[in-house]
Image (cartoon, rainbow, N blue to C red; front, top):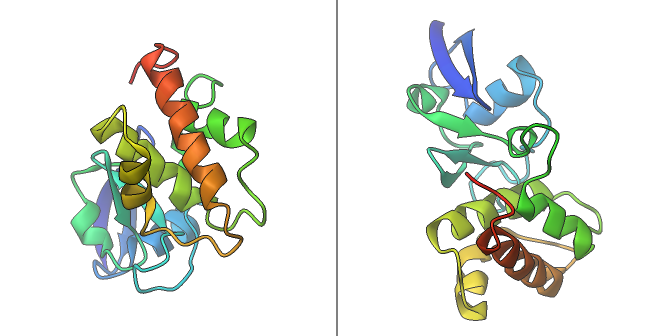
Length: 160
């Protein structure tokens, strides 16, 4: 066991875990965060996605030791001061979720995409979102929500 210090959602946490423990397990079991979920355990479905220094990464196969010294944002940390992130609001406005299981990965991946490319084309949205699986097939609503969030962010509804 080793003491690992993580910066998650703006707060510093020290956990005593095996450095090879998947980051997802630490986020859920030690820090009590429920946004990232276990799906496949192979970094293929995207339900475990978190933002690490602004990049969408899979936490199910990333050792917690590799997260030390980074800024981690989970779904719980996306909103600020009681205000939803534009991506979260767009998901509500477009009524994206059906079962909701993939939404953590979808929302965080969309946020990383928009931070990297504030005005993506439909093709860029599909390409940027293609690694997060949605078994309910709400891909058209996801695309519409990403476009709505891009407009909201361009209109200055968020400063991040």
